[in-house]
Length: 85
Picture 1 (cartoon, rainbow, N blue to C red):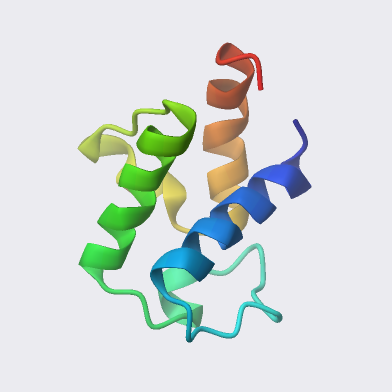
Picture 2: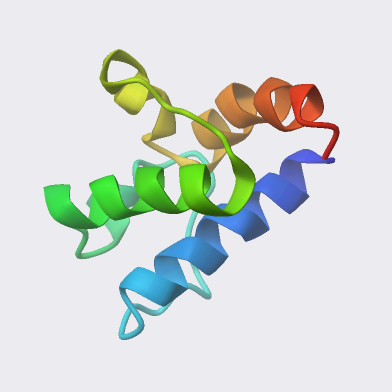
């Protein structure tokens, strides 16, 4: 799996939980909450979808690692690799 594939997975999840958001111009190095109208419940939904769809657990202490697309990739790439994805 590549960094870009992780970006796409995260954006696909965001599209499901916030279908009215325009995801075409999301900058990978800027916090998602600074670019999109995501609240804390939306963020929890992202974490829950990662667990449900991919079996990836994100402990509460690590939530900050999912701030931007780039930080999501850095954090999630090894977890996807552990799952053989």
